[in-house]
Image (cartoon, rainbow, N blue to C red; front, side, top):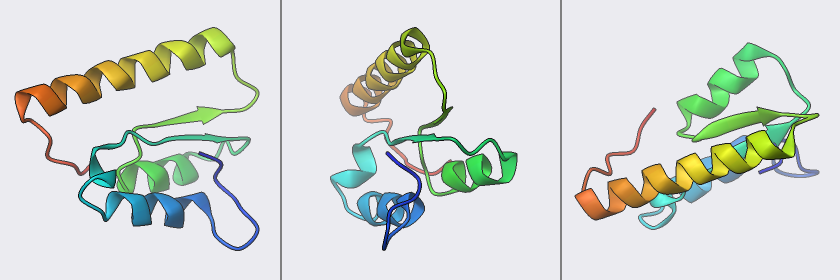
Length: 85
């Protein structure tokens, strides 16, 4: 997810998605040119699954997406879905 939009930032979009029952189960990965640790921590605080900084390596992105999908599948099948960072 892009961090900054014209009228709504990615953090707010993430908050809104995570506030729903179904959305709470979706792993959200932020992609941005922002390198500031405080901004990354802000994303994790609202339950983002990961934060990928641009420029990125496509193999790394694929590995991170695969990992989060596998973790998400485990949580769904095991009933261990609690949310929160």
